[in-house]
Length: 168
Image 1 (tube, rainbow, N blue to C red):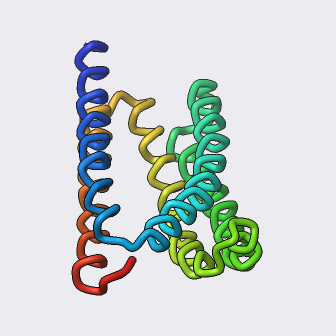
Image 2 (cartoon, one colour):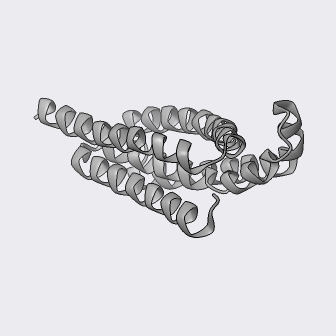
């Protein structure tokens, strides 16, 4: 049972890694050097922020679920609500200081990219908390399926933006 769950999770992560690797050459050829660098820098800023928030809330979620003092629905709803408030605060902060971040990178065009991607922070955080909850309760197959499907949707939206709007 455990080996099967680990295999399913590895398969899902492998598919996501393959999708990402296949996208890299396409993105490098679709963007100018400046746009590709701006894309990478904006992802660095936004995903680093989201990853820190996710790490904190996933750790607290596992801790509270393991204690088994409250109902799982109370734990997940409280965790999601708090994470939503923190991630909205992070979004607002990044949105406001985007010009200063762009100056630090020496790339003033980065401001709009950062502001655009910062919108994803609450979604990334919420997704990861729900994913951690599903894994804790042994729903690895559903978690992996959702992970791969959401990655495919993200890549599809990126392709549409590049092909039809000639930008991200």
